Image (cartoon, rainbow, N blue to C red; front, side, top):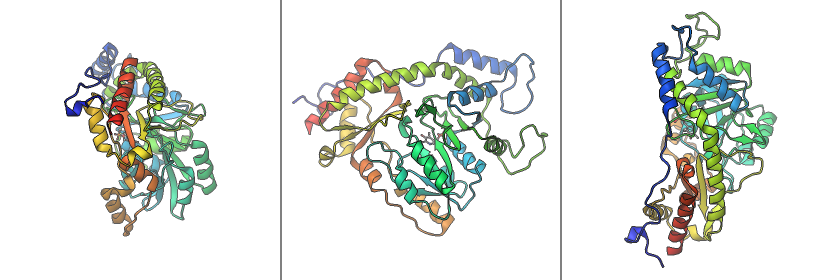
Length: 403
Ligand SMILES: *Cc1c(COP(=O)(O)O)cnc(C)c1O
């Protein structure tokens, strides 16, 4: 057997992977335009008549890309979720059904506004919210479901929409990881009532920080716009504040960077898709690896992450952290990923503060997969060349053989 790098053997890969973010002259040029215009913020007058503001252009292009009629730029993807809940009329004390396998912001954005997250378990083979489990969690206080397109894989929007309609619930898509993704040919963020996106540094379209809210509903759009603009109304007077809102605006500088990044997105998506397909092929041949199921209705996967699982018979006798550490030593950054949010102490405590009760939701599938089966690679690895995919598979195979 080949000696593992962690034990002093030769690592499979020493060259690293594609760095993130990727940028060039266009980012610099658009940023210069913003600086020179003197219009740096998301509100106020344009001083130079020749200057075309970047934020409206970004919102227009983003909405069109996701098949939404409207997009609103915001400070980040976390705030985008809170605003979407507010815009849809969800109130403090109401409950929202969320999956436990997601970034904490999905739950904390609700709790920040006093909305209580109720956890519905995930599907074993996609690791996305299980619509049947979501429906089981519907109760008298339920007002909304947040579907999370984890890794850039669209959740089952067809079933979730049926369930939301049947129970009169708002359906929000947390598409923070899913810019460019499509379900049955339709852009995510335009299928539910509202969609939310993140432009944070790690995300597939980034401006350092930033967020987007998408919708096809004019009323939700004006509500969300108002919440993000200190309660102003679209086309209203400057000091006309009709509700309590905050200043959640993005800057023109961020919009400039995002617009430049947008010109690179399609080519990057194609590269990630091609490399993910190659990884499916290479990892799929390794005994001890289980690929996630790709529902054919996921017509476009954004591959913010590439997730795979250790087969149960291997996971039984292998410690996931030990596995990741060994693959990492081979020169391939592999991570254990999320821990189940339904067990997060801060979420349980905040829920208790709002409700007065200790609420524990069991999500056995998520808990088992997180404990010892699921691992992930980040999107920048998928922007590397084909050779890199072979090295990833070789490192995984080498470490599995050592057990
Ligand atoms: C990144 C992320 C968020 C939060 O976005 P920020 O811009 O970092 O606030 C929310 N949900 C999910 C699923 C994310 O991955």
